[in-house]
Image (tube, rainbow, N blue to C red; front, side, top):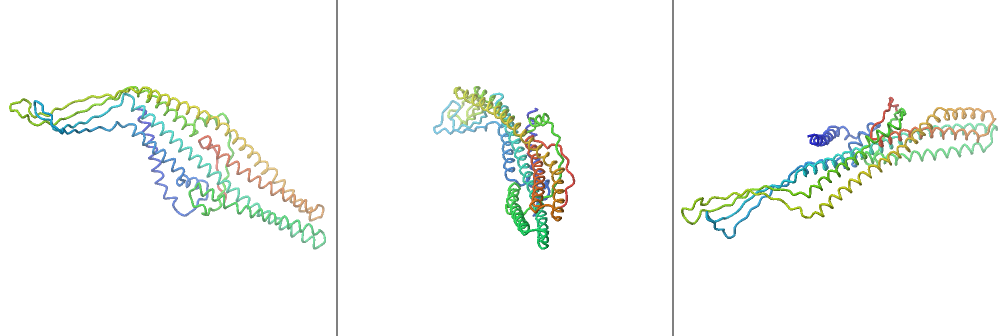
Length: 437
């Protein structure tokens, strides 16, 4: 009874996803492009063809359950006597029969259990595909956010260097600076213009990458995304790994593959036992040629029983050995996948913590110090106490630190998304009010 309920729950889950998709699909068919991360994820979940393919694979696997539960088709037979068979009660003209084969006890249950476990594995593969899709969306989204910040920083530095060039020109005209200062300012200006142009051109491949996972035309425009501040995670490694083992859909898919293989072992064992059939035959009989014959023209009805003979025992044993090998394969793959996931989580955790440390270092220490250094360097250059190279070096330092701060911020968000994909569940985090454009 419990297994029947679980099969119905599995089918109900498919229908719920179908109903949800049809109810909200109309909201996303308009021409408005997504702006926030939630809009990106929602659009991708409903329109990504890879996710749709995984869903259809799951849906197809669910239909295997109904097929596994079914009995073999009844068999109808018909025979026409080319030469009538003369019997005491009359000549026999034709014969009709119907029969039904019933598999040995437990065969249908084992077959259905295998199909149910396979469908559950397909559902987990769908969930894994969805998590991978969400990670791809978030990874591209935060890269797009970083690109916007990098372009803004490059523009601000460009304006700053233009100001320095004017200062250098003014000091050169008043003979307070030499001509090389003006040339250095112009070189730095050209370098920054090239960097800004490269960043602006980077928008095309970043947008194409996002359009690909959103299933939009690759050359469609995407507005600059709205940045969302996300608090850092409080990571407990033991709890994180326990949650991974419990929630990762790829691991769960392997678990259900093992269950399916075990059911197939039971099914293979039952091939050694015969299937039995029950049938009824009816024979049309004409009246007897002689008068006064009892039961003249009476049609005989025959109740029949049949058994197949499972004599090819080597093939049945081979099927059992094959099923056992599949079960061992699934178990080994599950353990190998678990080890790989744990190792990957350790790597991502290091990158996440390193990005958070760098974000704090650059945001709270290095960028403010670089801004302070640039301010005093500009004042010192105007006073003639340092050369122009020192001023440009201070500008380089500020540009580098600001970009590294934004890079660390984006990396932290991307690693958070990857951790959620690997663990298989959303990790606790608070989102503040989005900043305006």
